[in-house]
Length: 145
Image 1: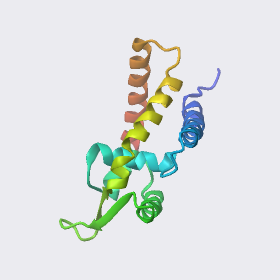
Image 2 (image 1 turned 45 degrees about the vertical axis):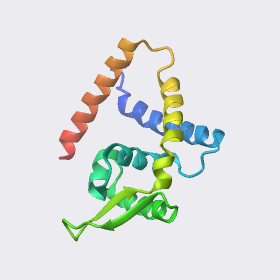
Image 3 (image 1 turned 90 degrees about the vertical axis):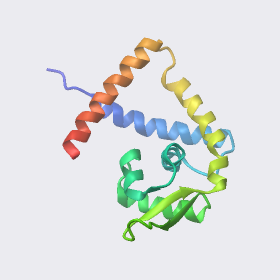
Image 4 (image 1 turned 180 degrees about the vertical axis):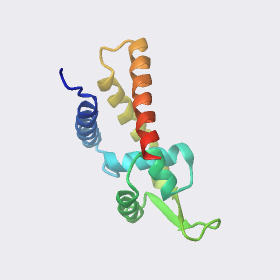
């Protein structure tokens, strides 16, 4: 019986997609953030202020990786990290005006990536494909709880 390749293909798509995203950023002369930082910015653009734990859950990035990235992003002037008034053991991360202004660039790159990902797909195929991916994600989240 032939082995199933879903996990391998998803991993490969993630890696090659990340390189393509960075290539498009370079082509558009967007050097304020990279693709990995874009995941964090996206989460913050969607949800506003949040803790590192919340960003980790929403982005899928490991908390240890995230902590180092947030420090670099703070040094780059993209995020502000402040004490959490509700829980002094954690900090709250928010966007700076610089990061807020980069959303338009990010949206343009994301649109270009969508065009690459879904080239040749019908709307029905896209919906079906995304539903399958959500099911796989749900299965993985269930295991990790």
